Each structure stands twice: as C-alpha cells, then as structure tokens.
Image 1 (cartoon, rainbow, N blue to C red):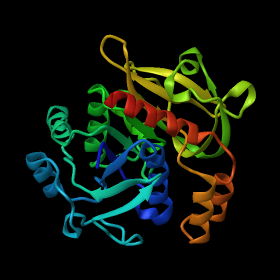
Image 2 (spheres, one colour):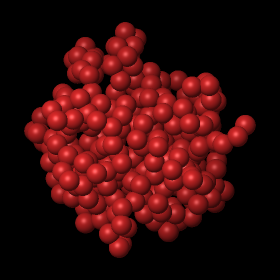
Image 3 (cartoon, rainbow, N blue to C red):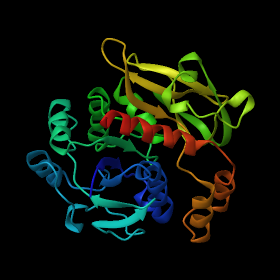
Image 4 (cartoon, rainbow, N blue to C red):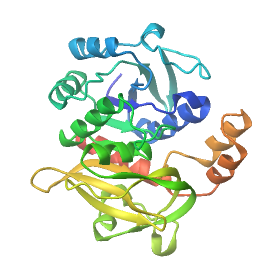
Length: 301
C-alpha cells in the first residue's frame, strides 16, 4: 500500500454525529493528500477503566461496544470504517487508551503504538469542570509533545494541552462565538503553522471560535504565537527543556469547522441555527491544517 500515516485522534465530539466525525475528516483531509492514513480514535470520556488497563498491557486494543459504558447513543457505535480521500485509503478505528495519567506509562504506551501524529479535538466538556478521564488525555498530549511527535490541540484540546503543561484555564461569564483575526507576534509570524497568508488585514489569519473556557497564562514550556481580540493565549508552540521548538501546537480556534461541513450538519439537525450562522463565516483554518499535515510528513522524513 506504500506509506501509511498513523494518527491518534482524541475524539471528543463523537456525540455530535456528522458534525464531530465530519470535523475529524476535515483534520485528516490534508494528511490524506500526502499518503494513506490510519486514524486511531480514542474516546477516554466514554471508555471503561478496565479496557484502559488492557491497552496499557497490550498496546493496540480495538474497542467493542462493551468497552464504552458511557457511550452516547445519539451517535451509533461503530468499531471501524474506511473511505477514500484524495485517492488514498483512510481507515478509522476505535481503540482504547490508558486513563491513569502516569507519564512514564503513557510514554511507553505511545511508543508501542508508534503514531506519526496526535490530535485532540474540541469538546462539549470543559477543563474548568474537570473530569477524571482528562488526566489520561492530558498525559497523552503532554507526552506526545515532549516526545517530538507532531501534536495539535484544538479548542478544548488547546486548553487541555496547556493545562497539562502548567497553564491556568479560567471560565468566562459567557461564550465567545465568532470570527476574529489572529494577531501573530514575531514568533507566530515565523512559525510553520502559519506559513500560509491569511485573509485578514496585512495577511493575518482569520479564525473561528466557539468557547467559554480560556487559557489565561502561557506554560513555561511554550511560546505564545498569537492573540485574538477576545482571547490572549490563542496559539502556542511547545518547546523542549533546552528551549528548542517541538512540532506541537495548541490553537483556541476551530480550523476544522469548514463552511460546507457545517451547512450539512445543520441540514441533518446536528447543530443549531445559531451555531450554523457562526460556522458559515469564511476563515483560514484549512491553511493551518495543511501546515500541520506538512509538519507531520516532514517529521516522518
């Protein structure tokens, strides 16, 4: 089959049916333009602790319906599916992950899986309303970042990544939903993630947001890349202990919320009219996802 890129995707919008899985596909699309892709979907918010222990012991363990006692049946459970993107095969598999939050054990599990990238999606959950499974999710993002595996945290994923690295996350009084320009600082202007020219003033990226939790401090191990009018810690890049940049980022905005995908999700009743109106705004998310895909394949070498 040739090269197959393996991606661990923390799938936290699975209960939003086409909208959630559609967003996953938008993230994967630019990766699939370069190779076949195997996506390992993990749902720590729904799986049992027992299957997590087995995953730690055995490595790659596919999920059965019995392993997800907290499954939200608004979205039917399936174990795997496949499709073609850009002429390449794309396979989605649901697998188990350890929930313990122990970095040494998490790193060993990651090494057994050998992913080429790790992505954490947005979520209806909130870092400021902490749930036990977030320990495992945070450990996965922290370890993959420090191991030099290309890692991307989106919205909730950005908050969880930053929190796992020591940042403060606070809840605002109201939601911030809309499209704002991202003001890149000098580090952001030279960063690979933003190497495509944006559609805002002077080429600034235009991004779509929908969140109430905010990262309010920059982790010591991260560079701040840019800020939005309503949100200061909007994009960060992780560094190693020597201050050298790693291929790991957190972004508060939603690069995967494509206009066409949102329109379809609204038509099928999976998002509200208010959400649809927000997601219909044009933004530069596709360029960010394309840059992340380039970082993955550059890292593979």
